Image 1 (cartoon, rainbow, N blue to C red):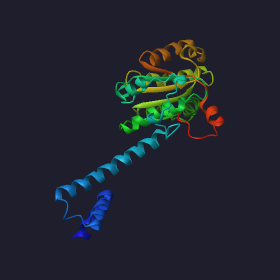
Image 2 (tube, rainbow, N blue to C red):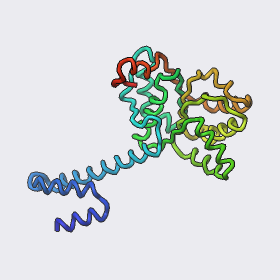
Image 3 (cartoon, rainbow, N blue to C red):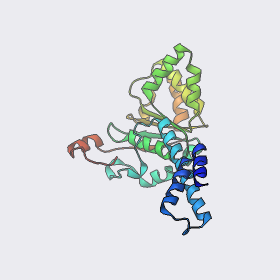
Image 4 (spheres, one colour):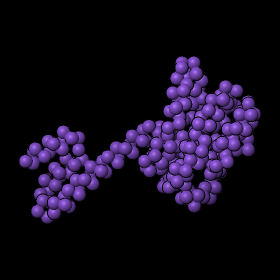
Length: 251
């Protein structure tokens, strides 16, 4: 009967329950625990395995710039202008469920990609779908998709995630066609799904990055008015880590 049960669990792909059942048999704990306790342990093992599997899949699909980033590991050095209360409020991801945006700015090396990835990681842990793109690469993909007929499909994919991360905005001026593509992405998600965007340039200088001023007005109106903002300051963390021999500086 034991072998039959193990085989059935295996055939139903309930591997965690199977492993927990085997563990219980090996430890001979059937006499010390009730049936309900043993069953609860097997169910918990399967539930945890499924939750971990879903998290791994969400993180893989998110394609975060820094997959190991975590809000719990942030460095709150006063020079960074990083407020613990703000991070705590945003860490529950309610802003994502409400369709609000997040803007992270700061000079190169101040930890923008790490921080925006950490929020993406937190969203995945909440069971939310996340996708992350470098802005310049995304605009190239959109331009290519116009030529190969996959433009609408790509725009459709960009609508789906609960949180769309756009990293490194403003690294190069946006041509008129890139302006239109960027507006399509932002407009499709406006007041529906969240966007988290990072940039070296302060928000006040974003308008000049668009060669089409009318589109700049439209994009910034949709991005900024319902956005939380974090402005990182201080020296480059990469430079600091290099001076310290490259060892474990938290970001």
